Structure formats: structure tokens, C-alpha cells
Amino acid sequence: MSDDATVTASLHIVKLVDRARDLDPEAVEELAARVEVAVAAPDRSVAVAFGLRRRGGEQPQRTAARRGRDRAIKALAPGGDLPLEQQARLVSQKLARYRPDPRDAQSQSERRWLWEARQSGLPDPGKRQIRRILGDDDF
Image 1 (spheres, rainbow, N blue to C red):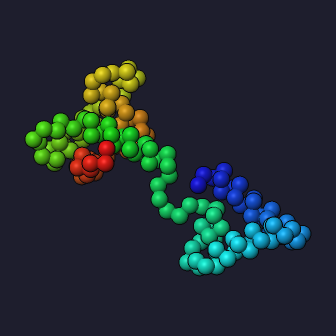
Image 2 (cartoon, rainbow, N blue to C red; image 1 turned 90 degrees about the horizontal axis):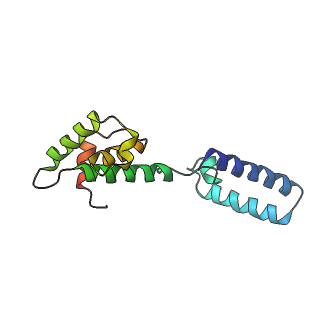
Image 3 (cartoon, one colour; image 1 turned 60 degrees about the vertical axis):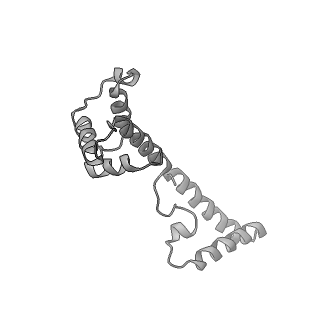
């Protein structure tokens, strides 16, 4: 949940409490329902229990960036009969040597994939992570 959404949800709960104090029946019912959910799971933090913050997981924007980077890394792998360890080493070397050039975004060569991997904004993965990416068949 973004900071704006957290603030919005917090304000909603504060206003809900104020309306409940004025004996607004809908506000009383909603507040009671939220408190019941919070009490039902006492191990949760207050923020999670009242829906002010997501519980764990990766932010959707980061997931999309990671998938784009991983797709580019798979495209960079030489494939063939080379073992994953060797492919991962080659991809890692390419990523380490690559220096972005805006023209690479329009390129039809492997520089395009290097550009996309770098544009994700995520750090370059290590050899072991690259090996896991190359071995993953979810793409």
C-alpha cells in the first residue's frame, strides 16, 4: 500500500470513529466490523488489522520491474548445450561490462536486452540469482 493510501485509510478510520461518536449507525457498524477483524487476529499489527498496510509481499511495481529484468536476462543467455552455471557467468559478465546508451533502447541486438535489464531500476543480480532466473520456466 502506498503512503497516500495509508494516509487515506488512516483518515477514513479517524473520521469513522468521529461519526461513531455522533452515533451514526452505519459508522458504528463499520467500526465494529473492523474491530472484530482486528480482534480475531491478535498477532497482527494494528496497521495490518485495520487495513492500513499490506502484510508482506512485494510491491506490484517492483514485481513488474523484476519480471521485465528477468525476461531480459533470459534473452541474454546463450542457451544451447552450455550448463546454466556457464550461461550465468557469461550473462553476469555482460551486465558488469555494459554501459547504458539511450540508442540501445531502439537496438535490435543484445544491447537492447542489456538496456531493458538496466532500465528496471533493480540492481544487477549475482551469478547464483541469474542461474535461478535462467532455470525458471515461468516466462
